[in-house]
Image (cartoon, rainbow, N blue to C red; front, side, top):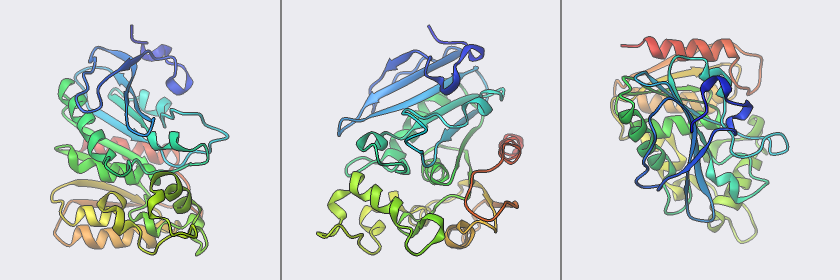
Length: 287
């Protein structure tokens, strides 16, 4: 039996679990909350929490970096907030974080021979079609925003709502510092160890070796018509390092990227609850 929305515990982990096949998942579309999981390679599993209301828009949430001392897996980000909307809500937890207890951020890329963005896109299509959703919104901040950007093109008529995301993984510097390579190094050690130099160093432009999974710029060179609500703060170094290069690539073909400029304190941080709710409500009102 599914758990009713009003009885869902913090973190959503009291929802019943159902095993599905990763490539051909079969979901339960009845109202209530459940976790669906599928075994993947490398001893990992893909887990998603679904909050089903029925014939309504579907909002998908991707988490960003996790403080592993604070959060356990699976992590379903903004559960309390999105469960308050009269919409279906789907929350994904990144399976790559099972590869190492030190790994905090893996951007939902998958690894060699696994394009996780495409696989998750297939799951979302199955869910939204089964629910007759008239709108699918993919949301995320920072690393979760990258996942939303990368997954959205696999879902027809979707809107990506992103907040200061990375757009090129090999350009991400923690804190915007030239020596801020920890996230890249930890990712490569756990997810793509074969790409590290013999001395453990990070190859220059390693994202090119991974392919478009590691670059929204590369992916969106070939994408046409994907709607993006890109929330960006000029006080965040991501505005210069990630938004401007992506905007230049994607907007040159008159694609529907809509920038929303908002003010924050200097630094890289998630949006406030007010800003996040405004962004979701704006996307829900779109024609």
